[in-house]
Length: 153
Image (cartoon, rainbow, N blue to C red; front, top):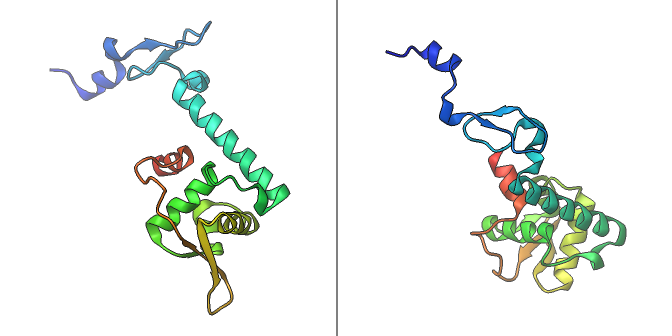
């Protein structure tokens, strides 16, 4: 009979893999292709890094140029539309918290999407800018990569 302590101290030979990175001889566990030092070589990680970099570029562009720079097909605009489709009308402040972006950036996205006819803007009784979805084009089954990241953490 194998004791738990022996099982923890003796790795299963099937689960031991060497890191696929050139020049790295580190062992990995559970059949993973890369050690923690080289996990950025994994295609999925590269895809996520590229998506996050692209999103950061979109946000920077909107911060600099305002509502006119909003790309309705971009990751941030898609996330914003997805939030509105899932949860209904939201104030800019609430979207700011949900999307983890500055209020000014979310307000610029809201104005840009309103100009493009994707959302409508109004004010609450307390004077906050409220955003409402006008179309239901956002596909809920395929959220952007950054949404998948937040969900898995």
